[in-house]
Image (cartoon, rainbow, N blue to C red; front, side, top):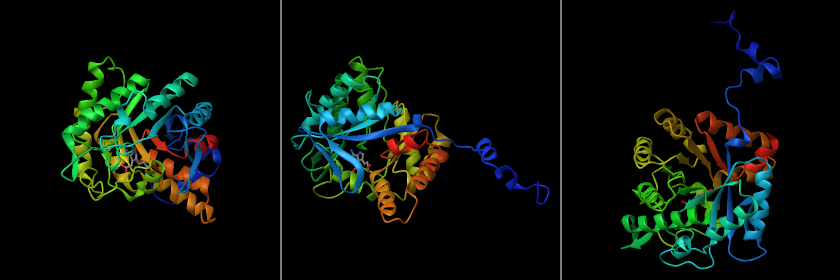
Length: 322
Ligand code: PBG
């Protein structure tokens, strides 16, 4: 097949031809919408670096959850901002913690919306790290018990799925064991299997008030330079019985998404993170790029790289365009 007999442009001539040979299709089924639940009443505070995304008290968050459901988006990912933080992040696993109350309120109003909870301690600890601090670093094994307790308490409150984002070793197994021992063997785990120590999380840490108060997360999140290590991380989580894999962030890590797609057959999610969202919003605000086209192109790229699902702050706007 060579020019001039073969002409690639033949199949690009009309919109219908292009539709017929399109290899990747975005659908509203692919999206998971992250939401921030804050303690208090009548709060709806836009995050300055994330236009269109809000910290909301429960009643307002439930209203938006209804809108998300009406748009046909299958799931939300919940993050909590508690009233009080402490060294062990106790609100995270308290029966009337911010997330537990939020889940109950959502389930009372839109029971069919799938609620996935972020399982981590950084939003609940006064030091902002994702686990228990010992000798200046996050202690892996004592953190596991707290994460398992947090996942169990989310399941008890009605969560449909838990998503550990802490990057402790062994946390998927610890959570699986805890859920299974308490009659929650039907609750899936979506592990943030491959999570890099990324500067793209900047706006999220304002949104979730979860910036570390000292040091950084390099002793538990992955080095952005590493690709083979991503396969090892994913293999560990598969061994520990995760139900989904995830790569985070997405834009600068499309090769990793493709690697995981080629090596594992579990459903794969990509997290289109806060900094990626903020960059697009800022450039569009300046009139430098076409917001909607760039958004759909980025989301399509993540899917083409191999993601089945995309956790994205764009979920509502993308759903409206599809
Ligand atoms: C941690 C968590 C983070 C994000 C999701 N879960 C931040 C971090 O690890 O510092 C980032 C999401 C985003 O940037 O959109 N629990």
